[in-house]
Structures are given as structure tokens and as C-alpha cells.
Amino acid sequence: MHLRGQRQGDGSILVTWIRRTRAAAGDSWVLAEVPLGEEREEYEIEILDGGGAVLRAITGLTTPAVTYTAAMMAGDFGGPVASLRARVFQIGALGRGAALDAVIQT
Image 1 (cartoon, helix red, strand yellow):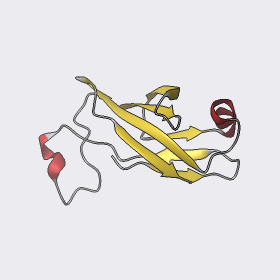
Image 2 (cartoon, helix red, strand yellow):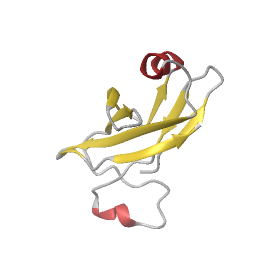
Image 3 (cartoon, one colour):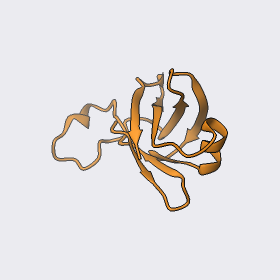
Image 4 (tube, helix red, strand yellow):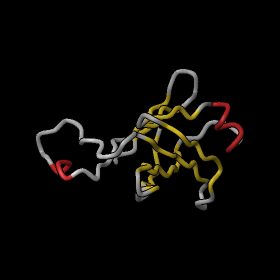
């Protein structure tokens, strides 16, 4: 998964990522997107503070994207942030997959 963030005109941050797969055909160099390899597509994202504590968890996401609103930012950090640390989990039949933990520059 590659984690990206893009500041929106309303001050929110659109956070996107590329899903992983557990499917055997997922190691292809010709596919634009890897096969899901699960019954359904689901993700969880955690917003972290500088020390790694979870400030906010967003669950039940069915697409590889979430909007971190200006209101959420104000509640978590007191206002806009220039960078954001997030941890994304893809959920599958075996539970949470390995976390992608990254700092997003916006």
C-alpha cells in the first residue's frame, strides 16, 4: 500500500492508498490494480499523534480513501497540520493485515 495525502480546498486532507492482495495472481507486473483476494474490500485507518498514540480511528471503509476533515483535524490537533501520521489496515478473512504506517506531507 502506498499512502498519499492531498490538501483539499476546504482544508480537509484526502488520504488515499493502493490496496494489497493475498491472491496468488497479485504478483503481476501487467495488472493496473491487484486482485482483491477477499470476499469484500474493507479498511481501517488510525490518525496518530507525534508519539504514536491513536487520536482517531475510522473503520468500515470500503474504498481505499478517506477524507480527514478540517473539523476532525481541529478536534485532534487544534487546527490545520502540515503533516499527518496515519496507520492503514486492510481487513480480510484473517482479520487486520499488516499496518502501513507513514507520515503524509500535505
